[in-house]
Length: 344
Image: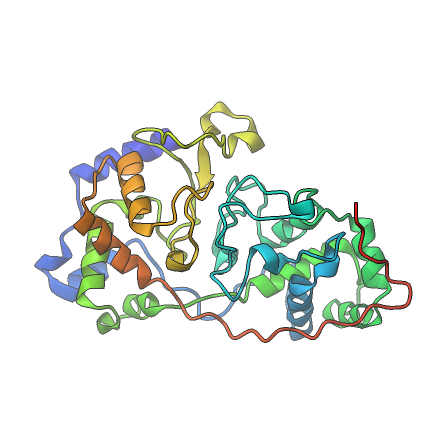
Protein backbone atom coordinates (compact mmCIF):
# COMPACT_ATOMS: atom_id res chain seq x y z
CA UNK A 1 0.00 0.00 0.00
CA UNK A 2 2.69 2.49 1.03
CA UNK A 3 4.74 1.72 -2.09
CA UNK A 4 1.71 2.59 -4.20
CA UNK A 5 1.25 5.83 -2.26
CA UNK A 6 4.91 6.73 -2.81
CA UNK A 7 4.47 6.19 -6.55
CA UNK A 8 1.43 8.42 -6.50
CA UNK A 9 3.44 11.11 -4.74
CA UNK A 10 6.14 10.92 -7.42
CA UNK A 11 3.56 11.23 -10.18
CA UNK A 12 1.83 14.16 -8.52
CA UNK A 13 5.08 16.06 -8.11
CA UNK A 14 5.41 15.88 -11.89
CA UNK A 15 1.82 16.98 -12.42
CA UNK A 16 1.15 19.67 -9.86
CA UNK A 17 -2.39 21.09 -9.63
CA UNK A 18 -2.90 24.51 -11.13
CA UNK A 19 -1.99 27.32 -8.76
CA UNK A 20 -5.09 28.93 -7.39
CA UNK A 21 -3.41 32.30 -7.53
CA UNK A 22 -3.58 32.22 -11.31
CA UNK A 23 -7.34 31.97 -11.31
CA UNK A 24 -8.43 33.46 -8.02
CA UNK A 25 -11.09 32.06 -5.71
CA UNK A 26 -12.87 30.09 -8.41
CA UNK A 27 -9.73 28.14 -9.31
CA UNK A 28 -8.89 27.46 -5.68
CA UNK A 29 -12.43 26.28 -4.96
CA UNK A 30 -12.37 23.97 -7.98
CA UNK A 31 -9.02 22.57 -6.90
CA UNK A 32 -10.19 22.07 -3.30
CA UNK A 33 -13.33 20.25 -4.44
CA UNK A 34 -11.13 17.67 -6.17
CA UNK A 35 -9.89 16.51 -2.77
CA UNK A 36 -12.38 17.55 -0.10
CA UNK A 37 -16.09 17.29 0.58
CA UNK A 38 -18.10 19.19 3.20
CA UNK A 39 -19.15 17.38 6.33
CA UNK A 40 -22.59 15.80 5.94
CA UNK A 41 -25.43 18.03 7.06
CA UNK A 42 -26.78 15.22 9.24
CA UNK A 43 -25.13 12.34 11.09
CA UNK A 44 -24.66 9.17 9.07
CA UNK A 45 -25.94 6.13 10.94
CA UNK A 46 -25.24 2.49 10.15
CA UNK A 47 -27.93 0.32 8.65
CA UNK A 48 -27.39 -2.30 11.36
CA UNK A 49 -27.61 0.33 14.09
CA UNK A 50 -30.65 2.47 13.23
CA UNK A 51 -31.06 5.30 15.65
CA UNK A 52 -33.76 7.08 17.58
CA UNK A 53 -33.63 9.91 20.11
CA UNK A 54 -33.76 7.46 23.01
CA UNK A 55 -30.68 5.62 21.75
CA UNK A 56 -28.68 8.83 21.33
CA UNK A 57 -29.69 9.96 24.84
CA UNK A 58 -28.65 6.58 26.23
CA UNK A 59 -25.34 6.72 24.38
CA UNK A 60 -24.63 10.17 25.74
CA UNK A 61 -25.32 9.03 29.30
CA UNK A 62 -23.05 6.01 28.91
CA UNK A 63 -20.33 8.16 27.33
CA UNK A 64 -20.12 10.26 30.49
CA UNK A 65 -20.75 7.51 33.04
CA UNK A 66 -17.66 6.49 35.02
CA UNK A 67 -19.49 3.42 36.31
CA UNK A 68 -18.52 1.61 33.11
CA UNK A 69 -15.01 1.49 34.60
CA UNK A 70 -14.22 -0.94 37.40
CA UNK A 71 -12.99 1.89 39.64
CA UNK A 72 -15.86 4.30 38.88
CA UNK A 73 -13.17 6.83 37.91
CA UNK A 74 -12.93 6.78 34.12
CA UNK A 75 -15.46 7.39 31.35
CA UNK A 76 -15.22 7.71 27.58
CA UNK A 77 -15.06 11.46 28.15
CA UNK A 78 -11.93 11.09 30.29
CA UNK A 79 -9.76 10.51 27.22
CA UNK A 80 -12.07 12.07 24.62
CA UNK A 81 -13.12 15.22 26.39
CA UNK A 82 -15.93 16.96 24.53
CA UNK A 83 -15.19 20.23 26.31
CA UNK A 84 -11.75 20.21 24.71
CA UNK A 85 -11.10 18.95 21.18
CA UNK A 86 -12.57 15.51 21.70
CA UNK A 87 -9.22 14.31 23.07
CA UNK A 88 -7.36 14.92 26.35
CA UNK A 89 -4.34 17.06 25.39
CA UNK A 90 -1.92 14.57 26.91
CA UNK A 91 0.88 12.64 25.26
CA UNK A 92 -0.62 9.43 26.63
CA UNK A 93 -3.93 9.08 28.43
CA UNK A 94 -4.11 8.04 32.07
CA UNK A 95 -6.15 4.93 32.84
CA UNK A 96 -6.76 2.35 35.55
CA UNK A 97 -4.35 2.65 38.50
CA UNK A 98 -2.88 5.67 36.70
CA UNK A 99 -1.36 3.56 33.98
CA UNK A 100 -0.46 5.30 30.74
CA UNK A 101 -1.71 4.13 27.37
CA UNK A 102 0.71 3.48 24.54
CA UNK A 103 -0.66 5.95 21.99
CA UNK A 104 -1.99 9.48 21.91
CA UNK A 105 -5.81 9.62 22.16
CA UNK A 106 -7.34 10.72 18.84
CA UNK A 107 -10.31 13.06 18.73
CA UNK A 108 -13.82 11.60 18.78
CA UNK A 109 -15.22 14.55 16.82
CA UNK A 110 -16.05 13.48 13.24
CA UNK A 111 -14.46 10.08 13.95
CA UNK A 112 -17.51 8.23 12.63
CA UNK A 113 -16.52 9.36 9.12
CA UNK A 114 -13.23 7.44 9.23
CA UNK A 115 -12.62 4.13 7.49
CA UNK A 116 -11.63 2.52 10.80
CA UNK A 117 -10.89 3.42 14.42
CA UNK A 118 -7.69 3.58 16.51
CA UNK A 119 -4.30 4.49 15.08
CA UNK A 120 -3.87 0.90 13.89
CA UNK A 121 -7.40 0.52 12.55
CA UNK A 122 -8.22 -2.51 14.69
CA UNK A 123 -11.88 -1.47 15.06
CA UNK A 124 -13.99 -1.12 11.95
CA UNK A 125 -16.30 1.61 13.24
CA UNK A 126 -17.20 3.69 16.29
CA UNK A 127 -19.63 1.04 17.50
CA UNK A 128 -16.91 -1.59 17.70
CA UNK A 129 -14.42 0.88 19.11
CA UNK A 130 -16.77 2.03 21.87
CA UNK A 131 -16.78 -1.34 23.58
CA UNK A 132 -13.03 -1.87 23.59
CA UNK A 133 -11.55 0.71 26.04
CA UNK A 134 -14.09 -0.37 28.66
CA UNK A 135 -12.51 -3.83 28.72
CA UNK A 136 -8.87 -2.73 28.39
CA UNK A 137 -6.97 -3.31 31.68
CA UNK A 138 -4.88 -0.19 31.06
CA UNK A 139 -7.90 1.99 30.39
CA UNK A 140 -11.21 1.29 32.15
CA UNK A 141 -10.37 -2.23 33.35
CA UNK A 142 -13.91 -3.52 33.34
CA UNK A 143 -15.54 -6.68 32.00
CA UNK A 144 -18.75 -7.31 30.13
CA UNK A 145 -20.17 -9.12 33.15
CA UNK A 146 -19.36 -6.25 35.50
CA UNK A 147 -20.81 -3.63 33.15
CA UNK A 148 -24.04 -5.58 32.68
CA UNK A 149 -24.31 -6.38 36.38
CA UNK A 150 -24.11 -2.70 37.24
CA UNK A 151 -26.42 -1.45 34.51
CA UNK A 152 -29.09 -4.07 35.23
CA UNK A 153 -29.26 -2.95 38.86
CA UNK A 154 -29.82 0.70 37.89
CA UNK A 155 -33.57 1.07 37.19
CA UNK A 156 -33.10 4.18 35.11
CA UNK A 157 -30.79 2.40 32.70
CA UNK A 158 -33.08 -0.62 32.40
CA UNK A 159 -35.80 1.76 31.25
CA UNK A 160 -33.49 3.67 28.92
CA UNK A 161 -32.30 0.50 27.16
CA UNK A 162 -35.88 -0.68 26.68
CA UNK A 163 -36.75 2.62 24.97
CA UNK A 164 -33.54 2.73 22.92
CA UNK A 165 -33.87 -0.83 21.62
CA UNK A 166 -37.61 -1.45 21.39
CA UNK A 167 -38.65 -4.99 20.60
CA UNK A 168 -35.35 -6.51 21.69
CA UNK A 169 -35.35 -9.00 24.55
CA UNK A 170 -33.06 -8.60 26.27
CA UNK A 171 -32.41 -5.00 25.30
CA UNK A 172 -29.65 -4.48 27.89
CA UNK A 173 -26.68 -6.27 26.31
CA UNK A 174 -23.03 -5.33 26.01
CA UNK A 175 -23.39 -5.10 22.24
CA UNK A 176 -26.14 -2.53 22.75
CA UNK A 177 -23.94 -0.59 25.17
CA UNK A 178 -21.44 -0.14 22.36
CA UNK A 179 -24.16 0.54 19.77
CA UNK A 180 -25.68 3.30 21.90
CA UNK A 181 -22.34 5.00 22.50
CA UNK A 182 -21.54 4.69 18.80
CA UNK A 183 -24.87 6.23 17.82
CA UNK A 184 -24.14 9.20 20.09
CA UNK A 185 -20.63 9.58 18.69
CA UNK A 186 -22.04 9.75 15.16
CA UNK A 187 -23.72 13.02 16.11
CA UNK A 188 -20.39 14.66 16.99
CA UNK A 189 -19.84 16.59 13.76
CA UNK A 190 -18.09 19.97 13.76
CA UNK A 191 -18.77 22.01 10.60
CA UNK A 192 -16.37 24.90 10.05
CA UNK A 193 -15.87 27.85 7.76
CA UNK A 194 -14.03 25.47 5.43
CA UNK A 195 -17.31 23.67 4.79
CA UNK A 196 -18.95 26.95 3.87
CA UNK A 197 -16.06 27.58 1.47
CA UNK A 198 -16.48 24.14 -0.14
CA UNK A 199 -20.18 24.86 -0.59
CA UNK A 200 -19.32 27.94 -2.63
CA UNK A 201 -19.02 30.74 -0.08
CA UNK A 202 -15.48 31.70 -1.01
CA UNK A 203 -15.50 34.66 1.37
CA UNK A 204 -15.75 32.24 4.30
CA UNK A 205 -11.94 31.98 4.32
CA UNK A 206 -9.52 34.87 4.65
CA UNK A 207 -6.84 35.54 2.04
CA UNK A 208 -4.21 34.12 4.41
CA UNK A 209 -6.25 30.95 4.92
CA UNK A 210 -6.72 30.57 1.18
CA UNK A 211 -2.98 30.97 0.66
CA UNK A 212 -2.41 28.20 3.20
CA UNK A 213 -4.97 25.98 1.50
CA UNK A 214 -3.29 26.57 -1.84
CA UNK A 215 0.09 25.59 -0.40
CA UNK A 216 -1.49 22.56 1.31
CA UNK A 217 -2.81 21.36 -2.04
CA UNK A 218 0.27 22.16 -4.09
CA UNK A 219 2.55 20.46 -1.56
CA UNK A 220 0.49 17.28 -1.96
CA UNK A 221 -0.60 17.09 1.66
CA UNK A 222 -3.96 16.21 0.09
CA UNK A 223 -2.72 12.79 -1.01
CA UNK A 224 -3.39 11.56 2.52
CA UNK A 225 -5.43 14.35 4.10
CA UNK A 226 -8.55 14.48 1.97
CA UNK A 227 -12.26 13.71 2.08
CA UNK A 228 -14.85 15.19 4.42
CA UNK A 229 -12.70 14.64 7.54
CA UNK A 230 -9.51 15.95 5.85
CA UNK A 231 -7.97 12.57 6.67
CA UNK A 232 -9.12 9.34 8.22
CA UNK A 233 -9.76 7.80 4.79
CA UNK A 234 -6.67 5.61 4.41
CA UNK A 235 -3.74 3.90 6.06
CA UNK A 236 -0.28 5.25 5.34
CA UNK A 237 3.32 4.49 6.20
CA UNK A 238 4.81 7.10 8.54
CA UNK A 239 8.14 8.00 7.00
CA UNK A 240 7.56 7.54 3.28
CA UNK A 241 10.66 9.57 2.49
CA UNK A 242 12.61 8.96 5.69
CA UNK A 243 11.68 7.33 8.97
CA UNK A 244 11.35 9.76 11.89
CA UNK A 245 13.96 9.11 14.57
CA UNK A 246 11.29 9.18 17.27
CA UNK A 247 9.17 6.44 15.63
CA UNK A 248 9.30 3.14 17.52
CA UNK A 249 5.63 2.12 17.31
CA UNK A 250 5.07 -0.65 14.75
CA UNK A 251 1.59 0.66 13.99
CA UNK A 252 -0.76 -1.55 12.01
CA UNK A 253 1.83 -4.35 11.90
CA UNK A 254 0.82 -5.26 15.45
CA UNK A 255 -2.68 -6.01 14.14
CA UNK A 256 -2.01 -7.70 10.78
CA UNK A 257 1.52 -9.09 11.34
CA UNK A 258 2.19 -8.18 7.70
CA UNK A 259 5.66 -6.71 7.27
CA UNK A 260 4.31 -4.20 4.75
CA UNK A 261 2.19 -2.71 7.58
CA UNK A 262 5.14 -1.91 9.84
CA UNK A 263 5.02 1.82 10.73
CA UNK A 264 1.66 2.13 8.94
CA UNK A 265 -1.05 4.12 10.72
CA UNK A 266 -4.51 5.37 9.95
CA UNK A 267 -4.17 8.88 8.57
CA UNK A 268 -5.56 11.20 11.27
CA UNK A 269 -8.21 13.78 10.55
CA UNK A 270 -6.99 17.38 10.53
CA UNK A 271 -10.34 18.83 11.55
CA UNK A 272 -9.98 20.65 14.88
CA UNK A 273 -6.24 19.92 14.74
CA UNK A 274 -5.65 23.27 16.46
CA UNK A 275 -7.32 21.79 19.58
CA UNK A 276 -5.92 18.25 19.60
CA UNK A 277 -2.29 18.77 20.58
CA UNK A 278 0.13 17.10 21.20
CA UNK A 279 0.58 15.58 17.77
CA UNK A 280 1.41 12.19 16.26
CA UNK A 281 0.77 8.72 17.64
CA UNK A 282 3.14 9.36 20.56
CA UNK A 283 2.40 13.04 21.20
CA UNK A 284 5.84 13.93 19.89
CA UNK A 285 5.29 17.67 19.55
CA UNK A 286 2.92 20.26 20.98
CA UNK A 287 3.62 22.78 18.21
CA UNK A 288 1.45 22.56 15.10
CA UNK A 289 3.97 24.35 12.87
CA UNK A 290 6.65 21.88 13.94
CA UNK A 291 4.27 19.01 13.16
CA UNK A 292 3.77 20.44 9.66
CA UNK A 293 7.54 20.59 9.16
CA UNK A 294 7.98 17.01 10.37
CA UNK A 295 5.30 15.77 7.99
CA UNK A 296 6.75 17.74 5.10
CA UNK A 297 10.23 16.34 5.60
CA UNK A 298 9.33 12.73 6.35
CA UNK A 299 6.29 12.21 4.12
CA UNK A 300 6.86 14.53 1.17
CA UNK A 301 10.56 15.33 1.11
CA UNK A 302 9.78 19.03 1.53
CA UNK A 303 11.60 21.24 4.02
CA UNK A 304 8.96 23.85 4.80
CA UNK A 305 10.43 27.12 6.02
CA UNK A 306 8.85 29.05 8.88
CA UNK A 307 6.72 31.18 6.55
CA UNK A 308 5.38 28.16 4.67
CA UNK A 309 4.65 26.19 7.83
CA UNK A 310 2.85 29.18 9.31
CA UNK A 311 0.80 29.57 6.14
CA UNK A 312 -0.35 25.95 6.27
CA UNK A 313 -1.13 26.27 9.98
CA UNK A 314 -3.25 29.33 9.20
CA UNK A 315 -5.35 27.18 6.88
CA UNK A 316 -5.50 24.29 9.34
CA UNK A 317 -6.93 26.56 12.02
CA UNK A 318 -9.84 27.28 9.65
CA UNK A 319 -10.76 23.60 10.15
CA UNK A 320 -11.66 24.27 13.78
CA UNK A 321 -15.38 23.73 13.74
CA UNK A 322 -18.50 24.45 15.71
CA UNK A 323 -19.01 21.80 18.34
CA UNK A 324 -22.51 20.44 18.85
CA UNK A 325 -24.20 21.77 21.96
CA UNK A 326 -24.06 19.01 24.54
CA UNK A 327 -25.67 19.39 27.95
CA UNK A 328 -24.28 17.10 30.61
CA UNK A 329 -26.69 14.21 31.11
CA UNK A 330 -28.40 13.54 34.41
CA UNK A 331 -27.20 10.00 35.07
CA UNK A 332 -29.62 7.58 36.72
CA UNK A 333 -28.77 6.82 40.36
CA UNK A 334 -27.45 3.43 41.43
CA UNK A 335 -29.83 0.80 42.74
CA UNK A 336 -29.67 -0.91 46.12
CA UNK A 337 -27.61 -3.79 44.75
CA UNK A 338 -25.35 -1.91 42.34
CA UNK A 339 -21.76 -3.00 42.98
CA UNK A 340 -19.32 -0.58 44.53
CA UNK A 341 -16.11 0.60 42.88
CA UNK A 342 -13.37 -2.03 42.68
CA UNK A 343 -9.99 -1.09 44.06
CA UNK A 344 -8.01 -3.80 42.29
